Image (tube, rainbow, N blue to C red; front, side):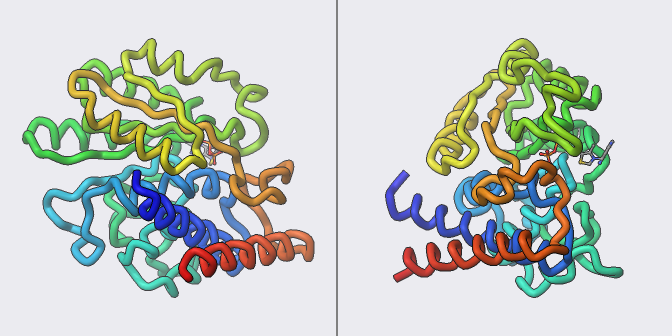
Length: 284
Ligand SMILES: Cc1ncc(C[n+]2csc(CCOP(=O)(O)OP(=O)(O)O)c2C)c(N)n1
């Protein structure tokens, strides 16, 4: 990846991270940890890899994303706003009555959202079906599927993975956000997933593991996945819940964060100032 493009994606990631903090602080609460772990991935998808046209969200040959861990809606909305699907002011309407940005994604409400999610596990089957349809029609399109590691507790994920692998649906790029935590603790304490990459390999996937905050590595892994033609593909993202903001990374329970105390609000403000300074510095 060229240096200029890498820097542009780093700036985009900073903007997305800023937006996530801004919108949740404005709302007063929300799914912060699992949104922040996906910031860099969203920047690579919406800043480079996805074939999309934000001014024409229904473009026939668009790539699609299924955010199966739908509670991370805030990071998706931020990426969509930054890509130009809708006005950034919408971000302040998160979860309001009648909003276009409900807490969990709804394909009937938000431009750029092609699949409704929120009930964990179900997005995996949706993505499998969407991608299979595209493949059968011989369309040159990709469906990206983002799954959480806690979400893998849902048996439906494994049924869908077996289906994707058995039918070699290689246009369904499976991204697993392995941030090692779920709603109420560490995944290994709640239901040990053992080695997720080994399991995906055993299921028949071409499997890569990358650091989920390394924009270049994520991009290269997606390029590699696209070059695999005879096998299902999976990228395990080695991430941190709350990624990119030490205060939230270290917060014991950072799944849904309440911005109702001075310390948390101050930490968010400080992180946002730093992100703004980073963006301004790069844009000079
Ligand atoms: C079927 C179902 N059961 C329970 C929930 C409640 N829930 C929302 S998020 C979550 C934890 C998900 O963990 P993970 O996939 O690791 O998400 P992350 O930690 O990346 O945010 C749970 C249990 C749900 N949304 N759907």
